[in-house]
Length: 442
Image (cartoon, rainbow, N blue to C red; front, side, top):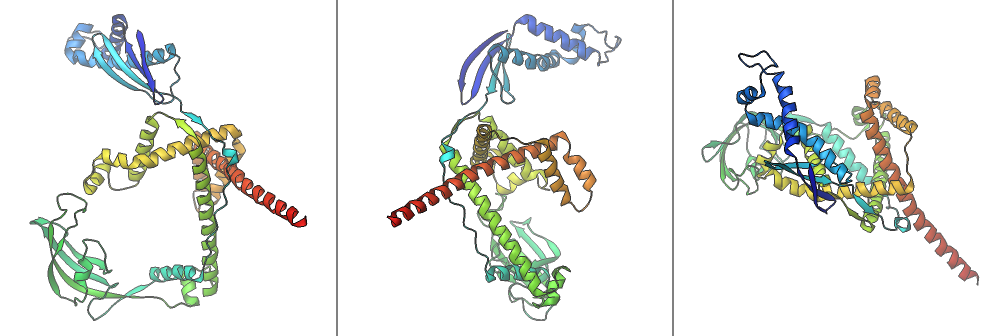
């Protein structure tokens, strides 16, 4: 085996590996022994057919591919050991030619992170947004809508009414939206199903039929419809008006039996809004501090890290969705490459932040003990309504414990950074006040 280190760039080593014919033949023989045991060939006992017969029966290409599957991993390991290369992630291997066998290897290398003087960063904490009476009223109003009732009315349709209607429509003789007994809330300037649809329903009466045309927007998902004209025919069968509950103690008890009065409901809402405001301020402050540390740092890492993060973003987006990637791409009229490019900036930012935080944790000697992981699992399971035993068992598997450890690791590192940034600001302010006081005394 001959290994050539062509170059190293972007934290990637590019190797060319040429295999000796004897090495390939040895792997071919090993592949033959594996396959012949599992292959039934007429005229031969299973496992006893000569190699030449097996090659004619299954094809030499299949035998060669099986040999490659066995040969390449071991050859790759030997190659990086010979070149004293430490791989950081899975390599990319491409067969360049088969006679002699030559393959190219791209080996991702460990990222290099050079931190700036992050201990000198001074950033003032985020001010907490004040909770006003208007904020509480807004939540109350949302709750009223959630507990509203809908009652039939004998009048023309008004905006915000809920209507029941039959819809027939087509675009260039192709069916578009066709549904009987559809429920639809008539909201002004609503873009669903098309802009202007709600406005066409306004002022219609019960049992009235209406025909109208609407333009499909140029950016409508699915390029075969974008920019074309849709023809609608609708028949209204029912009009319902929203009846909001009165603001009183009964309403508070309807929201939850925990509330005996409207005042207690408002107090709970105020408390939750304050907690949310404090949490938002804390998260925003943490982001500013971490961003400052990242901006001070220099790093070089293999592109595969960003590609992996992009793939993770896509998997998360469609993991719990009934819509698959192909269907989504068709709806938004984009290719997978275009979507990946859109995700590249946030993926790059996440990789950069993760690498910097790991380096800070190394510098600050951040550690997470098994007891801390146990405590976190206990906190998680205490909030579970049911199946606490099953949940605790699942969280104590090595995979989940490692994930929890990483979460605590990141949390503790960010906490250390914010303490340093905040402490520096406080110390500086204290020093200024002391110096001012001394000057006044003189």
